Amino acid sequence: MAIDHASPLALKSSGDKGGAECEEEEDAGNQRWPPWLKPLLATSFFVQCRVHADAHKSECNMYCLDCANGALCPLCLAGHRGHHAIQVRRSSYHDVVRASEIQRVLDIGGVQTYVINSARVVFLNERPQPRPGKGVTNTCEVCERSLLDTFRFCSLGCKIVGTSGGYRPRKKQSSSGGNGSGSRKKKKRAALKDARSESEHSCTSTSGGGSSDKSSVVQSFTPSTPPAASSSCRTGSKRRKGVPHRSPFGSLIVEL
Image (cartoon, rainbow, N blue to C red; front, side):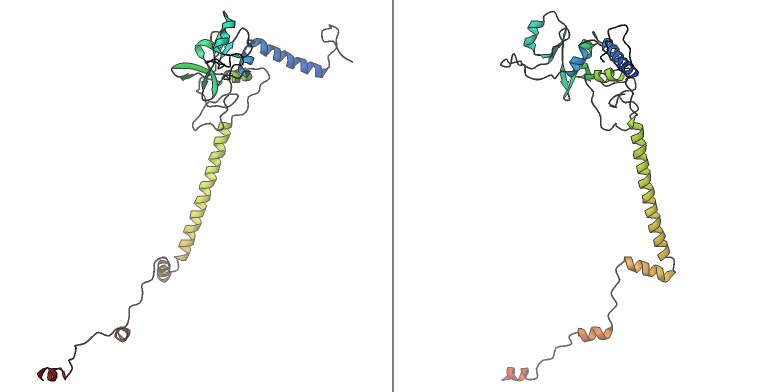
């Protein structure tokens, strides 16, 4: 049986009550933010305009806050005269807006700003960071990107998610990841110490048998010297040449 929620006499079950509470929280979140913010974050910029595709400047990098009907190129702004339009820029393949333009119509408190090309900007959507750097003490409450100590979020999208009623922040992975890496390093160091102690123990056990054992250990690590050749072997194998003798008939042949 269908229940008319608009009727004052309608009965609501526990499941309907939970769904109604979720809807009320969602409606409260939507009322907290301006109606153009979520469409702005979901819009794809820096694409070619379909209407002015043949024009020289047909890149869509503008957005009308009054109409909230998608990205616009500079030529499309002629039909939005008198409306509040902002320009979207790019930084490291991410969309940003100038803080001076967006803070007129939106509270950007708690969102970290960056200085790019001598202008202070705010990122629109989250930028997840796979692993926080060393010595980081503060990260984004939603995507865990490294932040300064005075900020909570890295972008406007993270602020919307982090300040919603039903959002539960995730556990910080920086501290747990740091402890895990530290424990792994400690285990490696302990293993190296054990290996060194075992090698030292084996060396001391082999060298503890006296002077003869020490000499054998030394000889095992150094090349052995060849034995000295005896005099008999030296004379037999290589005899020194004596005084030469002339033939006895050499003088007679000269006299004749």
